Image (cartoon, rainbow over the protein chains, first blue to last red):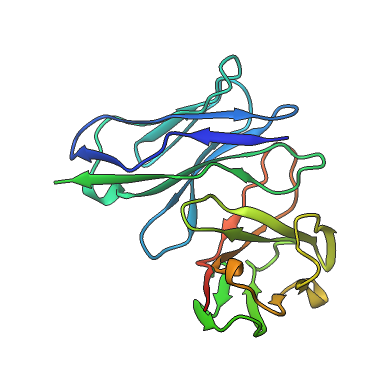
Length: 113
Length: 116
């Protein structure tokens, strides 16, 4: 079946540091890949997505590249801000018989000023 | 444009009591999902609707959980009777349709259920 593995948190960084949150997946076929973010007290929001190999999704300074050869979709940002503190979820959608998104467990990111 | 609306935001009940959650998806979205998110975990799909038809409820514990989506718009998820292990956040999401290779889903804020 499908599965998503992402690095466990919490991840604590100083403001303006470089961020990487690792995500690898197992899926049938050619899934679409997503990063969702959950700010404190709010619902899940789509951060970025990529639908085919070598695509790069980007939004709000975050980037992730769909790497089929390593089955990875790592999230990166060059300079984090305190406002980026949240829980980040990597997810995939493979269609076919699996109709919902398959999520990782989430990574809690804490940015200190 | 309004997002996915859920109510209530919080619910505390005693075990063996019934509880219901309501969801109003984004206008025009045909596909509606219910997920359960346990503490420290990612959301897990419970049921998916295409309009008013439940097309994937394989993960829904049918002995105590039920759901409906009358008229293909609003949806209600019910638990009867609730057990301690049902404490979780129940998320509703909607998408425009099941576009192959994309399936961007929009999530509501969730209902946090605590069973005592």
